[in-house]
Amino acid sequence: MSVNIVAFGNERDGFSEDNQQPGLIWSYLRRSALISQIDSSLSASHVGNPVFTEYQACVFGNVRLVVHDCPVWDLFDSDWYTSCRLIGGADIILIKYSVNDKTSFQELKDSYVPMVKKALNHCSIPVIISAIGARKNGVPCTCPLCTSDRRSCVTTAEGVQLAKELGATYLELHTLNDFYIQKYFGGVLEYFMIQSLNQKSSEKMKKRKKMQKCHRVQPPQLEQPEKMPILKGEASHYNADLHNLLCCCQCADVAFYPEDLSTAVEAHKIILCSVSHLFMLLFGVKSPSNAHDASTLQLAQSLFAVETGDPFPSSPRGVPPCVPPVRVVVKDSVFCSCLPDILHFIYSGAFQWERLEEDIKKKLKDPDKTEHVLEKVKCILKTPGKLNTVKDCKSHQIKQLYNTSLRLFFNTPVLADVIFKIQGTTVPAHRAVLVARCEVMAAMFNGNYLEANSILVPVYGVSKDTFLSFLEYLYTDSCCPASILQAMSLLICAEMYQVMRLQHICELYIITQLQSMPSRELASTSLSIVSLLKKAKFHNSDCLSTWLLHFIATNYLIFSQKPEFQELSVEERNFVEMHRWPSNLYLKQLADYRNYIHSQKCHCTVM
Image (cartoon, rainbow, N blue to C red; front, side, top):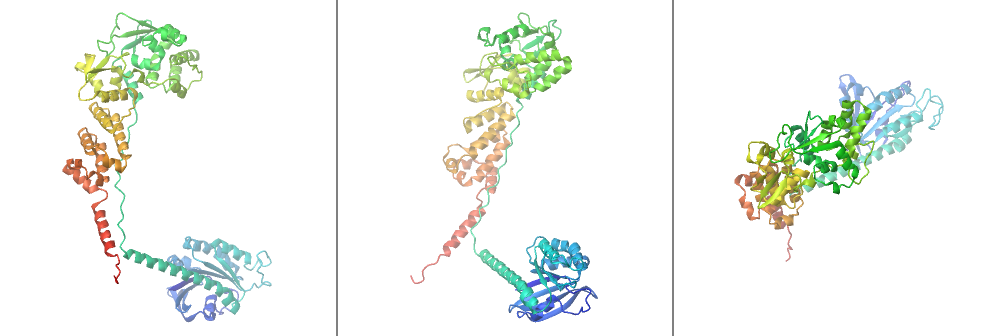
C-alpha cells in the first residue's frame, strides 16, 4: 500500500537572506526515524519551469510514501487539470506558509483556498495547515486574542480562522528543529497516515469479501411482475347532457308563453319537476292537499296559469302525438323576460347562481326588478318545510337546497311517456331523460323508427335487472353492480346502447374486484376469467381485454392449472407465455440452484 501527500505553499520567508534553508517536507523526511530510502526528483509541466518536487520514501517498513511538494501557487492558474488530479489522488493535504509573509498568506486566503475547496468537492481528505517561523516584530505570541502583530505578520487568529474554513488541523512551528519536526508536526502527520492506511485496508478487505461473494452461486432473483395497463375513468357529463336537452328542445312537452302568446320557451316537465315542488303542483305530480307549504301553492297560482284544451299553435319539436302538450302562461312579464336564463340555470344543475345574477342584471338593468326575479327563483327552488330564503344566496348554498337528481322518477309511471317491455314485465321511463343521456335512444325516438311514435317499446337480449341498472345510470349518473358477472352484463348493455362512460365504470369495477381477490380465492373461484376475456373482446372492450390478458399472465401458475386455460387462442397463449410471471428463465435458474445446493451438501467421510 501507499500514502499520497500533496503539499502546497512556501514556508520560506520571502524577505529572509537565507533562502537555502531546508523546507518542511525535506526536514521531516530526513529527521523522521520511520523514513528510509528517500528519492527525490524535480518534475515540470513546461520545460525550464519547475512546478512540483516529488519525494518517494518508505515508511512503517514497507509502506510507500509519495509526496508532491508544490511551492508555487501559480500551479492552479497554469495547470488546473494537474491540480485537480493531484488533490483527487491525495490521502493527506498539507498547506504551508510563513508567518512573516503576510502578502503571500493573503493571496493564499483570497485566491487559492476557494480553489482548493472546489477541488476537494466535499471529499473527506484530512488537511493540515502549518504556520512556520517566528514573528519578527516582537516575541512570538500564540494567543488568538493577541493583536500586537497584526500589521506585518500573520496572526494565530488568522491561521485558526483559515483552518476552520477548510475543516483543517492548525499547527504553528516556530522553528524547524527536532522537537517541532518529529514530535509536533511528525506526530500529527503520522496519525493521519495511520488513519489512511487503516481505511485502505478496510476497503481492501470489503472488496475481497465482495469478490468472494460474487464467485459464490447466488439464488436467482425473482423480478417484479410486469405492470398491468392502467385504466383511466371518464369525467361525468350528466349536467351537460341535461343542458344540451334544453338547447336542442327534443321531446319538449311544455311551453311557457307570455300573456300575449307571442313567443314560446320550450321545456320538459320531468326536469322541472325534479327541480321544484312548485312545478310538481303545477303539473299535477302533487295535489294541493299534499302541499306542505301554502306559500308554494300561492306562488304557483300567482306566477303561472296552465291552460287545457287546444294544443300549442304549433306543437313543439320532438313531442310524439301520444303525449298531450301543456301550455303555461307566465303572468309576471318581468319574470317571463328572464325565463330563458332561468331555465338554463335550472338545466345546468342549479350550481351557477352567480352567473344567473349577472345575466339578469345585464338584461333588466334595474336593481329592484333584478331582486324581484331572483327572489322568485329562490322561492321556486324552496324545499317545503325549510327556511331557506337567504338574501345573499351563493352557488354552494343553492346546491345544498336543491338536487337535480332524477332518482325520484326512476322506474315510476309518474310523467312517464314510454314503457319498455322486457321479459314479460314493463318498465316505465321518460323520453326526455333517455334522449338526453343516450345517443342511440335519441336517434331511436327522434328518427324514422317505430319507437318514435310508439309508447310500448320491446327490449331483447338483456335481462330485466341489467336493463334497470342501465336506466338507473341514465337517471342518476351512478351504478353499483352487485357482482363481477352483473358488471359484465351491464357493460354489454352499455356497449349495445353506446354509453361509453358506463362501459368504463363497469370495466373499472371488474378490474378492482379481481385485483382485490387473494391468490387462494382466485384458485378456488368458479368465475371463468377466460370467459370474461372473450366477452370483453367480443363487445369491443379493448382496455378490459388487454388488462385481463396481463392478469392471466401475472397469475400464470394459478390459471395454467385450470381447464379454461386451454380455451385461449394461439395468439392469446403466445402473449401469456411471453409475459408470464414467474418467467421460464427464473424457474430454470431456481431448479439449477436447488440442484447445486443439493450437490454441495457434505456427508460424513467416516460414516
